[in-house]
Amino acid sequence: MLIDILIWLYLVNALLLINHEIDSAFWKEWNLFGMKGGMNGFLVFNFVAIFIFLYGFLEVAKGSFIGIIFSFILALTGIFTFGIHSYFLAKGRGEFKVPFSIFILISTLVVSIAELIVSLFAVM
Image (cartoon, rainbow, N blue to C red):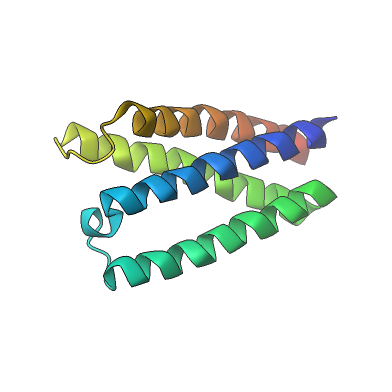
């Protein structure tokens, strides 16, 4: 039962983070973070990140211990994503200020916290 909840939380969180990355391409997030390589570097980063998200989902779906580790990592990634973008918004940056961008960030935080809690219970 707990693993079923974790599967859905992981899936929704990965979907939110992937959508955030799509949104990030619109906002040219590589400029916000000063990433080397511009759009090409951003695409390579996201290719690797999304591969890891998807592989992690397979492990969570198997109910493996490494799947729970991936779940922790994804949840912490979501919390970090919310935090760093909140910081930039508080500094007056104009990126990610539209309602749906904010909805994705807030939803990511909520789902990430829930996923983190369920992951903790799954370890016990």
